[in-house]
Image (cartoon, rainbow, N blue to C red; front, side, top):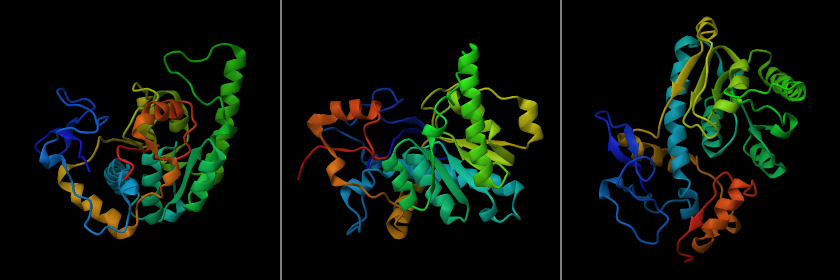
Length: 288
């Protein structure tokens, strides 16, 4: 498995990610490439799991690190609380799915959004409450260009009201204790409104926008903590891998959904148009 540490700080955390933001590195859309040996982490010998299952490792490694920090931050203010009385919620995606599985094991109520019947069924199978995001189709709100015409404003308010009603029902009226928000700007207004007091907003990504806005006084008064992490710590690589092997914290992968190398362009198109049901879209270089 390729560890994405092109440049690390003195504590072992990633500063620049290999093949993403680090200069003079190349991606993995090649049948043969050259990689520094210290970036390669062996799959456990005689592993119980398949290569396609391990191919989703990066989302799990990222989730492990983000959950570790977010959970500890929440606990600093709520150390005497039973997690079973509190909700961890996420907007959706592979990292969020992996993170909510850790939250569930820690005893929290867990729920996340999904936009298809197949994904909602997968969440149900994993014991995660699925929230159909088709119930609030107009929830996105561009903070730099908010809706101004009456029809668009009304549509947003209707969707926001339904979303907050759902959160209220799932949390017993308390709001979200830990909100995993990897979407960013267009959904951030709804994220903040859904938060409980002493809640944590935690993120490892910005899929739909990097710039978010806070009303600082409200965040202070509500004692909201904001966690931002990137990748994970190099020295934790083997620890996370071993936890996956030992605890079955690893995805189920349908072999029929794996794309061949020559179909990568089709995979990208299918993903962008929402035609990929799996949270872990994969391609293989060698059929064998």
